[in-house]
Length: 441
Image (cartoon, rainbow, N blue to C red; front, side, top):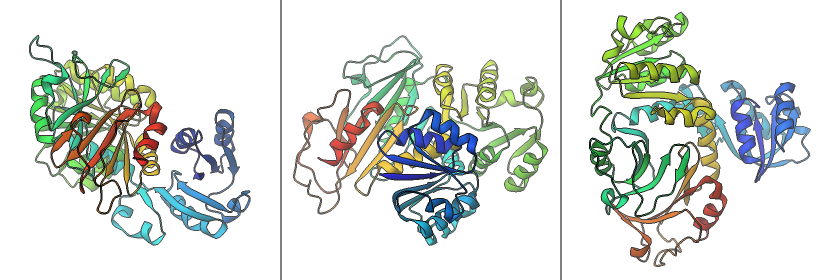
């Protein structure tokens, strides 16, 4: 595809890096230093200019583009550029990042014929919110194609028993990945779970929730008292998502303006404490040590890690950190911290998944981007109805057929019926082969 990215910041750079291997990418920005950095590191075409000025796009050698992605730091610039670009070139598909939650409730992106709008703070808040339905979980993913969920659980046993996958799997729950130290493992039937493994379970959410009680014995079974460190846009959006959950929530922020913004948004539903949260004695003086869950949601990953470690000193086991820089992902997991993607990383993966998905196939990434899954729903009049799925001849993959609540492995595959879903798990390094396979069933 021919792709134009408006905005050469963190998100634009990461998208260009990820897409340039398979696509022709042009990145537009008016900051020459950002473009120079990209030219030094990536094989992409850079265009110096204002993404809101149609004359910028007239300088392009092509007048037709498959995909336009607007990810500058300004909502107004992103909206205007998606409108302006049509005056200069023909664009088939448009994706946009928007920070202002107002636009999520309006029809403005539909009026501008935008195909996908990503709201990063909303995505982040939804991921944190899902942890309250599964308090033992590290991450929860839901899918439109099926009722099953992908839920990761850290292994902390209450006894010396060792679990094989065959001990925990059933016709409605399967293990599809293990994160062990810095490695991601596609498990086999006789794989033995080890202390501190992060196991990814796919299937019936109620059964996974019950199973997590025996696999994870340290984290609380229920959460009532929550502390949020940070008062920026992401932290405020998380607090708003949790405000109606009958929780006791304290938000700690040293910036007075952020505190005022939080107060206006949350309307006394959250206790807002204006304090320099670097102070270790806050846990004592403000009663934070009684929390069931700590969420560190600043824009600084190192600060987020430190607050989670401090919380552990007060025996708070459910510690959550917003991950803004992928370089810190593995360290956070090594420290037993629950990791949620920050707004910029979340935007990157949301757009990548939009690009890889269609009306037929949906793609999702997990395990910090090391693993990928594809779901193909069998719709009415699908040419696959009546056909039996053949095993994928790709190493380190798991293939399942879903029918209602039952997960069938390849030895039990039956001819596909309307409403079935074919699900394929593998490593991101094999994503291109996996994608080709599921599209050509």
